[in-house]
Length: 84
Image 1 (cartoon, rainbow, N blue to C red):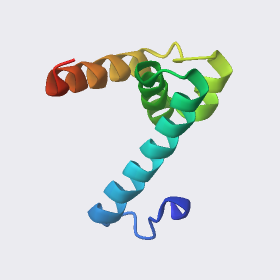
Image 2: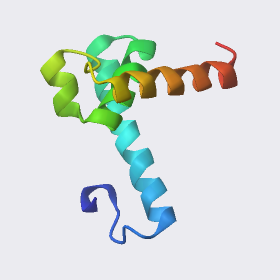
Image 3: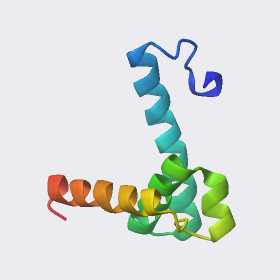
Image 4: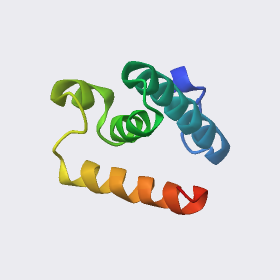
């Protein structure tokens, strides 16, 4: 948490900032690796939910029901909000 700028885990503003910083890092990593923003976003969401170690271990979205459902839910919301 401290690497993400969160010194007080009960501070909502710090937590949101830390989460955004973490997601940006994941997005940059996976978009660079895949060369595809859509696939990169899916892997970033999986890394946020299950951890980057699990994404690496399985070479993609881990076969965890919770992670699969999370990625589907968030990408669906994103598509609705962006019209994609």
